[in-house]
Image 1 (spheres, rainbow, N blue to C red):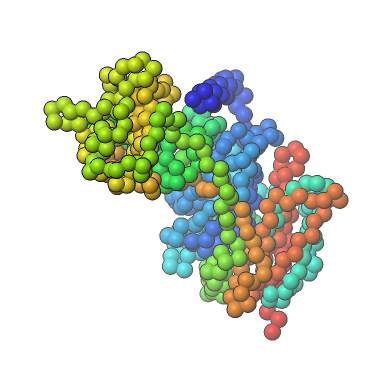
Image 2 (cartoon, rainbow, N blue to C red):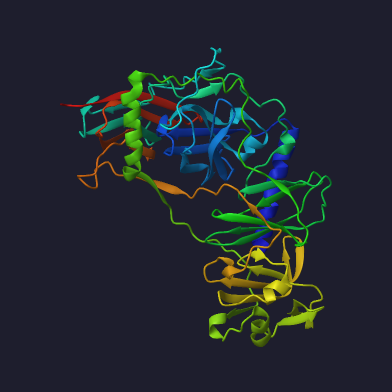
Length: 548
């Protein structure tokens, strides 16, 4: 509990520091560097991303990055919540299957920048999406282009020397990269986008968008923050709300609404859940909540005024090859989840009981009454309720305990008392006054099921099941340039992907790779971050030809 309090205090102090800097017009600025492995993809594919976020040339304190695709109409397609480790992440963005063929704005940013709607602190680039089932929309009347391509290529700082610039299908080769000694580079070789001459896009109107309010700063210094707004006209700021996160582990978070009806929950160290439940402590009273997704607002129309995707009959072979590549690329290039150390959830109990050690009765009320002396089962007006003994005070609590089933609060004790304990593995009790943040409870009665599925106990009637994006698990990209099976076709569109590769003391590295069975023009792209915090690029073309 002390650790939780200190972390909360640190977050508050850091937020206050940023607030003071804001008042003095010294708002810290983030710089986002991204190397995407490909600039053209098929709907359903994953785009590998190397992400670095800095602030004053040091790793940003933001613990999460966000990636999404924005259409020319301002609609978001897909989105990823990406945990950062010291400002870095090796991640990906999945393109939804229903994404129409077109150019899209790929954005990567932190919640800090998004909360003040400052697009100048985002990484933004154009990519093309091909969907065989949804062709591009008909070309509209010509519009003037509202943005500019960012010429950030620095050919003098990075040298690319492929063994050969013309390869036959399946030919093995190598690539030598030269730059500053001991620097770190990201390298990709992927199918060149024939529909975009350049890749990086900078809005014509840089800087904070109109209407940005620095009072809305929302830096995620501890964990992912979930924000919602109650639908009631006048919010009750004393009402307590419970957010429970469920998956491999379960965790509980508490909060109250502010005068605007906004509720914030900081998930802290929890980085994996499958679904979320929100309840109030008045279980019999329904309530509404508008959940705010963590992604940034759509950019201005000037930013989205990019060229149309024009596909002609002559492009059929290229498109067929891209679709063919998409069907096999994941066989050679796929992310594997890093092993995560489980976090501590729940609370240290005073007593715990494995119910397998006892003969279970037909309901929990009888089971608790017979085996657990510090839990008192009572009835009032034919309704069951529970009271816990207060061991330090040698008395019985007047109020009801906080009751949890796999971390989910249960307020209907009568219904729970009649529930079968068949699928309940363990009962744990805290027989003392217990505080979660500043909220005190007359003890805790917690049940754990075998499968972390509530043991079949139903989700409370007025609980809100929240449709909310999951946090992407940290990954390592496993790239296998050689075929695992000689009979398996190699139709890769990404020939090489290496993130954060360190050059030797002479500033060089040689990497082997092989061509796939898909002919065409490929793009070698190398990026690095200079000592003064700039991301520079060098690109070169590579031809893969059918030798027949």
